[in-house]
Amino acid sequence: MPVNVAVIPVAGRGTRLIPLTKSQPKEMLPLGRRPTVQHVVQELAFSGLREMLFVTGPGKTAIENHFDIDTEMVRHLRTNGKEDLLAELDFERAEIDYFYTRQRRQLGLGHAVLCARPFVNQRPFMIALGDSLLGLNSRSDVCRRMIDHFDREGADAVIAFQKVPREEVVNYGIAQPRGDAGDVFELSDLVEKPSVEQAPSNLAVAARYICRPSIFDYLERTAPGKGGEIQLTDALRSIIQDGGRILGVQLAPGEKRYDVGNFESYFQAFVEAALADSQYGPSVAKHMRKILAEYPED
Ligand code: G1P
Image (cartoon, rainbow, N blue to C red; front, side, top):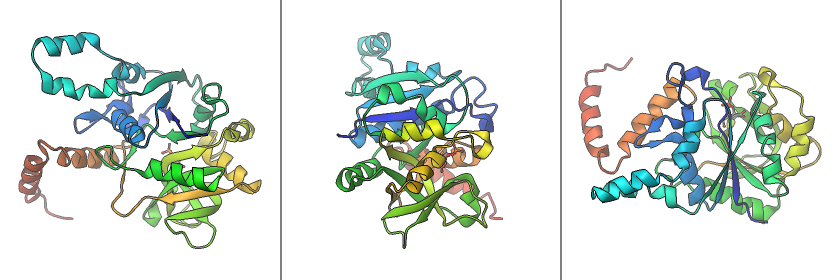
């Protein structure tokens, strides 16, 4: 069965980004000229996914509004001959179907995924965290590569991984590879946010997963873990412990993950997105070179 559906959890409150996120979803924060979540959807569409199910929560209606077709705006732009701006709304007309469900209680990522069960039903599906994107300009094919391996190898799950500096393992799900970890590798364990001492590697889960519907039964049985939340990582770990096969696909060299989870990573992502802008990137780069000369390195 082809992987057509993406579950995009966006219910998190974004507390690490207060006050920015006091009245707007962190997934709507701009990266260059598009909100973060639009980059995510376009990245998924580039890899062939056509059904997007958002798992939303309080204060997230701006996301639903963003993907609606705004006929009034289209009419206004057309009447005023703003063809260039109309092109910016092309994403509204892409052949993608949008669906929304609510996570009614904030019980963690694993619980958010479980909320997708009635919609996903018996299909394999992609999970794409709505505050993280892989590559800029929606041209990363990591999801496509994950789908290819999933189809070819019949694995129980496929997860994207990036290498992170050792001291950062505490922020991620970390893989224990079976043997040496090549571009594609099999997992023998997966641990949510281990200490630096206990981390089995520096291979960190990079916000994209493909799962079979059997994950839902595992999530139902998963007790609260790290932070008192129901962790997707723990359910995946149980699959491995039951003899299931989970593959890791590493981001290629130069393929980066951008996330808007905290101010530092958000600022870095915004700067890179502005530099990658086809129209203004070069002049922004010129400006930055100039102002950077005024910032001594520490
Ligand atoms: C979640 C997952 C973690 C993963 C990370 C980035 O953590 O629980 O395993 O490595 O996303 O994809 P969060 O950033 O929501 O705390």
